Length: 300
Image (cartoon, rainbow, N blue to C red; front, side, top):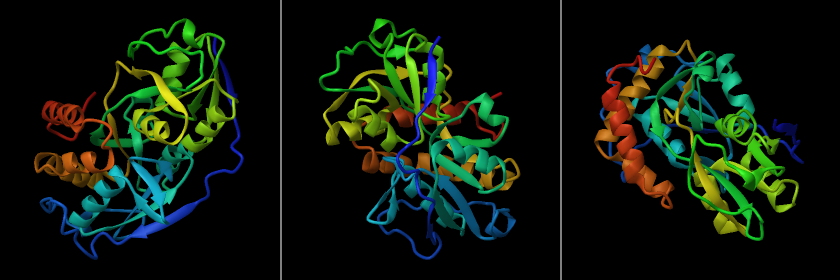
């Protein structure tokens, strides 16, 4: 049985809110998406005319703060969606394990940062169509005795992590995966990616299981590398979490996602904000998913 330890970060992620007036100006370099058939007046939000959104400030390439400005693939995607819906959007930074319960409790309209769509989460919140799919990577220091191997797809990992301390993000799909497949390891939970990489570099854990994009970014910053990647066989992709009372907003965002996938906006944003990972497999996954589920009742 794996053991689970909760690791408190030295400093919790501060509550940081930065607003973006999506309807104030258009980005001349972006591909304009078709206006939604649902007018802003018909879209109910927590604050009239404003989408309130929770995310992580260290969730690059999806969401992060650089020079006091929000940036990232999903940040820019949602800015464009809000602008096309004639709405503003307000981003607030939270630790990962708090954002889904906060949306479920009515404290925000949406949440995002490459969040996997699962049955368990659907009991609390709704999901839009996916906007991404990817892997979780087991990251180790360059001098680690943990050896690399083949990509793991819903399999037992084996002896490499037996008895090792593996850091995972609280309330994440990585944690669920590790609890299922890393049964001989000791799991240590962290509130965010920055705390996890500090834990790895300081020797508090032997490895960390984080999303592939963050892993690639950390490889450029620290003496770490990916030992192997994992894929959950029940993968539905990552989507935007949405409060269950925001049906019109969900349908409007879905319509925008379909348009932006078709007109190439999603492809362009993936290449801009996630250049280390080929965009084509992600786009192919989204195209197949959108085609398989043409309505807003996917999948059951």
